[in-house]
Length: 108
Length: 120
Image 1 (cartoon, rainbow over the protein chains, first blue to last red):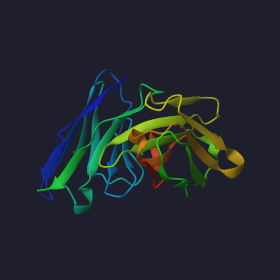
Image 2 (image 1 turned 180 degrees about the vertical axis):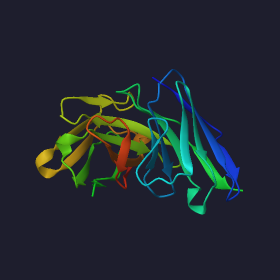
Image 3 (image 1 turned 135 degrees about the vertical axis):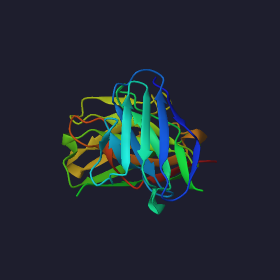
């Protein structure tokens, strides 16, 4: 099983600042990685797939990078609606899909 | 547009069974793989099971293998999760999710979830 490890657990950021979230895979997953955003009481929302492709309707301030075992989600200038929990998920090693434990982005 | 609506959650005693449903609209079930993902209270996301688009393959997380069964009824446009021998650690919000394209592997569409509580 591929273990996904996200860091940090919590990230405190002021509105307008940038944020960088990390996700590490226990073995190479090539570019088979997605990022999801989840707000309290809501279902997850797809942000990024194939490590760097933005999903439909996702603002350009969200960008993903990386391949192999190291991945990054960057939010260039945090808006109020961006404070949420972010999860990475690998799907290269199907048929076992695994999520990271999440990074909470909170208002500083 | 694509819509997924889960139902069937509730409170159930340990060792009992429950069946969740996920009613789909805006697409044909047999064109896409469908997943169940769960989230225990205050915890992260855990992938549970997948049914391939053609219905020929079903895969499960080790934590639910041999207890849960994923299936669908295309005529009713509904995905199911039959959960047997339920345990306290199965308590979670259960989401159904659809991949983006027929051969996609990431989850582009999600339902709102249904809460399952396993407690005596």
